[in-house]
Image (cartoon, rainbow, N blue to C red):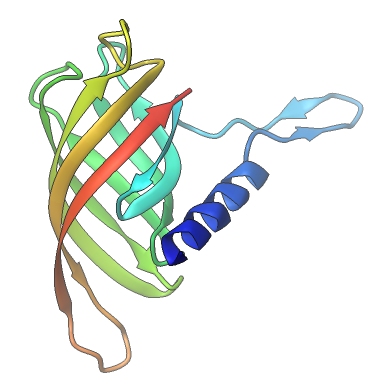
Length: 151
């Protein structure tokens, strides 16, 4: 039930942050970086992702499961979709509590598009250190993730 609330909240916030048009003398469009949306059961459960032309992920940013903001950078050894991708990630939970971690991810194409540009499923796992500023200890959390990216 709480995961559903988090997903709905995250999708609502991202919907509000989609490209907005400002009506003025010269119409301006604000475009978010990234070429795909991504949702799933992950530390960053809703956000924008950038993929290379061959489907390898470059970066991901968005709303974290703790209702903060996170950024993930992929360290690619092969420029292709169907391979193991290492990543490093940092962000916040509950808006102010920082975390840092990393992991691996494997992407699977959807349909006939082997580059994953129209959509891809991702499975993976990682290890994270979550902390709180005001005297609380640092907590180590291993994770397993499943997500879907789409245009």
